[in-house]
Length: 308
Image (cartoon, rainbow, N blue to C red; front, side, top):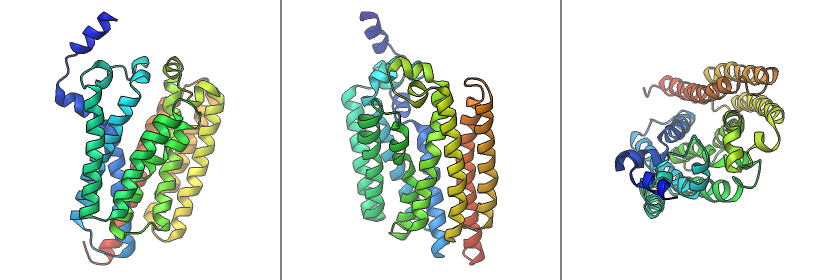
């Protein structure tokens, strides 16, 4: 016990690096990119010029809110993180950031984000951003992560909100295309995270976190991944029927979705978790390319109207 405490105090980590790690910057970048997709989609849909000011506020406020939510998550999950080899060096675990500082940072950044969006954009986008944090902290981290195999399915709603925030920031209303954006990320999250949880199955078991591979087994997880990839292809294809996206998006969504199904099917055909890492890496690429297609499609619409 004494040795562990000494190691935490002596952890060679600067305060700045510790706070960067506390925010989970890679997750923030992914969330901001989906929010950017919502902004461009809404701009092209309503045929308006891109409001750079609104875009910057949404990105800055979104980064702050996400950083705060991740900080609170690390504080609440410090016992789980300590038990897992992948996360045992996180700043709250090693003592680089005191618990009270992590809590204050998490709450403070969300207050700033809410205030910025309310004052500079609209209350609807502020409310959605706050809702994402509340779901992530209370529904996922506190309510489901330690108790249910469906933790990431339901809790994944938090990460699906940013593209809807981007849409609402431009339009001021939660319309059908925004709901589709939410649904796309919502259905993408389980196969993405289950692929990762296959790789970390032993870690989750050691930490007593009931992720699907730990409770239901590897084969059941593989089948669930395939089911969600098929549903995702159907959903992303149906999105084109709304008229919010065009041919650029549709071709990209079908091609990317079929490749996702291929990776999921290959995972089933291979023994144990062989194929889980390529699927996990592709899932990241999939989301990035899908939202890049949404942005490209929207830019085409805007340029067609003569605003670019």
